[in-house]
Image (cartoon, rainbow, N blue to C red):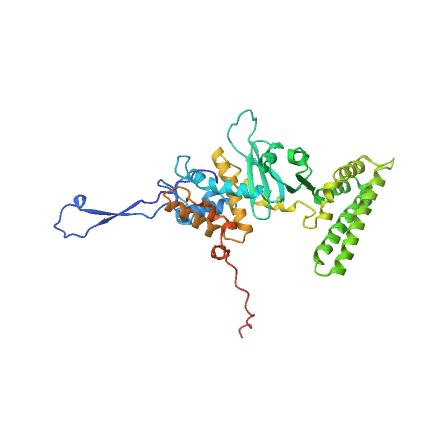
Amino acid sequence: MADATTIICLPRTKTAIWPTSTNAVPLAAKPTRKFPAPPTATSSKSTSAPIAAAITANAFAASAPVPASLPSSRRRLPTSSSPGGLQQLLPLFQPLYELVVDHNRREKHWHCDETRWLVFVPYQAKTNFTWYLWVFAAKESIVFVLDPTRAHDVPENHFGNDAEGVANVDRYSGYKAMAQAKAGRILLAFCWAHVRRDFLAVLTAWPELTAWAWSWVEEIGLLYQRNDQRLTTTEAPTAHAEAERLLREHVEHMRQRCDTELALPDLRLPQRKALASLYEHWPGLTLFVDQPHLPLDNNEAERRLRGPVVARKNFYGSAALWSGSLAAMLFSLFQTIHIWGMDVAKWLTSYLSACANARGKPPPDPQRFLPWNMTPQERERLSQTKAPPPGPEQPPAE
């Protein structure tokens, strides 16, 4: 289980026996010399920086269980819940996580979503082990928050009182109940992919409504197509103006069709339900018209949750509160590092080495390890290794 505390005992000292003649004192009395071992990422006999980097990167970036994350030569080392393993990494990453959260709050556009995350410990009045892992994905940072509830105060508390901008979300009522949304400081851009699913659900459940539902699916497809044309013609003013006109024309056509069909007295219940949701969320669904940088859907948040969902399937969740917190921190840090084009293992080794040099504590200046505080040269040094371009094909051997 990836949250288990893995104890990797590395020798802190090496004992060297001075060479002596065969007539010298017994072996037990021979003088010894002790050499200090290299510094470790944590303060006890636990993981060294490279081993800790391998475990955490594979477990929380590649979603692999801890035993599979260990180098093959160390897979027989025991796992335990005693102090000294992954739990000791928690205070090392806490300062970085808090800095990323603060940076995320100050951005202006987020993709938000949530998924189940199991935490197998009793907690207050909860009758089950289901917690929720929330994601707030922005341009420069990704933040995951683990919380026992799916209530609106989770995103409300994450954004804080000063956040302003646009959040791409699904139609979950928790986002609508945020104080920032009610005050108009955070606008909610709803997801057209979810609207499309409404009509697909009608299509599959009501065969007699197939033609009607499919016509709406095609309307949404044309909406995506015309928005793509607008985005790809920004360098050609004439073509861009025409694409802008066609997009706005189609948006107005869809609005009028929705109003007209909702007024029909013989509208079937599944039709009315799909159209009523479309009508209710129309202002948020059309924010992208006047703000072209906004996508039509919330697929970015769903992609960000894909890794944690795979991890949940591989190691089921967390067996302790501290390990759940560590998972949220590492998902946040690793995905943030990744969107900057940096190699997680290289960055992690660099940071844990700095912790080792600080005697198992966070370095005094953790902010310098965040991508937006690095120079381009520093980011390049820790960047992902690019595969060389393929060479010319060799003729087959005769």
